[in-house]
Length: 427
Image 1 (cartoon, rainbow, N blue to C red):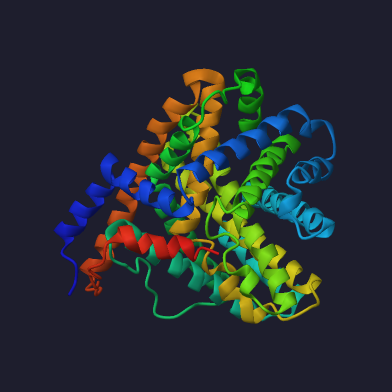
Image 2: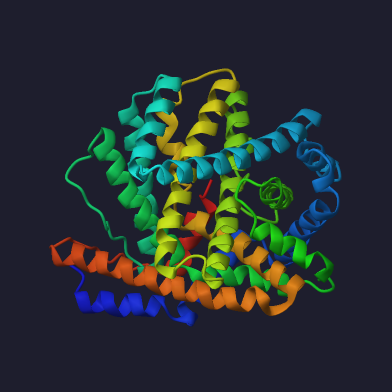
């Protein structure tokens, strides 16, 4: 039966509570990391990558530095080629998502819209890969639906289709539909402010890792242009640390089941795809940190965060399509069209938010420990304020859908157990 509006009010208000947020975050943390020791080792590794980048990475070509760091873990690589290609995949994905972020800003500054940008990108990818643009639009639409449904199920213990449409439009109208779902995904993503606490606990589990001498440098990078070499470099460093942690088995789900793929070509493609997803989740967390810092400094208003987050989500989706197409063609050809749904399906759900939020939270806590209380404590409060606005927006949409007679089925399962299957199947 249709969910009563009063019940939805109660559930969304509960979502704002610190206890509920921490419960969500704690369950994600338990599923993402193998155990407490794995959490500590992951935090330690990311810390080491960031610190070494700040000392050495900025003074040499980024690929040379990253390959050098990876060489400290010879047991992780099948051969020299895999090590070099992993570094290249990370760097190329960061370059791609930053390039799309810049392109979106330039596009909008010319008075053009985000749907127009998405439409043009879809047409370009379709033409370059000989795939019908309608198929790409449909893949993005399905992926966003799945991600948004998964978010509502995670938060409210029930799936709610918040933007049901009679049929999928094509062309620019289809891009407009996608943009509305991107905005909803952005609000759902921002609503989980408790995920930022994962990073705080990770950092606090370490001892003797403070390095305040690097504080001003990191703060400068956080506030630098999105396409600056150092802004990209820090993301490369964190991504490198995450790949190492995943390969060590400390971060679960990233490379699980890959070795079971018998076809050599498919296995190689899948490894690249999962690294790409991991890098994009790191970029997501880093972007959140930059946005919250801008709000705290008054550069950006709280009400504008969703629009900025939606632009990043668009850049993330387009980047995944562009680089996955390259991946498919580079590794002995093959049709991208049949894989579009799989390419995007797991990228936009709450599990991605969990990892992205964990990394964003870790970076925020790291910056705060290095420069004192100027960053972390204000950002924690800012994240809550932004999340409350996002939650209210989603609640309004949900109540509108339900008031129209939308049937919502209460699944009756504990989200604590359900999140485990979602996160473990992230990639």
